[in-house]
Image (cartoon, rainbow over all chains, first blue to last red; front, top):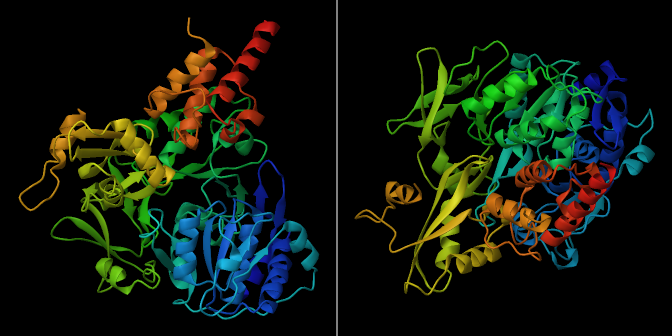
Length: 491
Length: 84
């Protein structure tokens, strides 16, 4: 981590973090003593290498500083949304068994900390991190001797979106993350003039990458906004004008929202973005063409996952090819299995699902990670996605939802005999949740009642767009749902 | 001509697929409106009512239910008519 000091000291007056709208900033020169000051405080609290620490912040500078402090200590960050619900928080605490929680000022937890008794520490405690604290703790001579990190050392556990019981902690290894960021940042031409507009939630894999080590490695700056919402989209002209953002990371739904808001903008937005990095969900050619034309920029699609990081992507020099998610990442091998599934082997791969060796073994075999996606590589090396091996995962605006878990919830509803949940094309999200339900006694259930039941028992992002009552769920002789019949009903 | 309240409810019904939308329906809890749907709602209501929602009100948390959104839109609609 001597590199950390070196990067901070190379251009100490350069801005590393700007919070749009609050105008709070941290320069590279401030980052070093700020991180060291917090690292000292956390060390005094007893945090050591390998300990897990849950981070509960919004998109704010304290999160980034806290994450770097944990990196100095060799501790493992477990970022969660500040408004994480009780079930999810309990699940993570139970599985990750953190040393403590670091959170934003005034954070109200959905659980009573005195009720949490993990094996080693009693009770679990929470520390708040504020800019005021950080500045009080720092001085030009604030030092901290960082621990040595090896490539295999985990630096974060990112919990996948999805259901409480099945949410898995993806172990991010130091060497893998740095290799991926080095390659991608170089290919994109990141440098000190790059200012990334970061509107993704910071606990999400994309938000995590683009607000932390990736821009830092290249001396770039992060323009941090609240996680995307209407007020952010409506003021996008300020982000590229007043705040100088010139690169953006987005999911397709955000691009649609920005197009919708464009007539509101008072400042010019065309030609301000060097490019837009877009992934996580299906990006349609028409949306790409419209956005590129309206904003006079280039959309560089990418394909990857939290487990594999980047598998394929476009760079500013890659000619666009319709239907492709880009060219294979430089140190990534791609193998198409006999059934069409994309498998990858690269230095970027994750270190398994935390404390779930059996689940890890299902996707990580002989050094190859099996993505669950199906595709092919064309004669020029472009990767094309054609479908998913399992239909269980619904990709709603980049959030992965397990269809089988929604089925389980619906099957627990009195009067439901059978259920099948599908992800069907949706103009806003790429895919949305559609549930088909067969009632045990026809006529005793209504779609409205079922929807109320689903809403009461599922997290909001998993709420079905529609629930359709059918006489029976069409299944093959071995019980597999015949999707084509259900899809036909929707037509 | 549709009243503002009717316009808000029919727009919400179109965006969320929930029917009926009641004045006391909660935007997030009952209708499941997320950040992307809220953007769509804002743009459609602004175009329909020929109003501009100010930045301070571009937050879904400003509105407890459908009625409170309708009330705000009525207020700014009256103001813009007054100016005109």
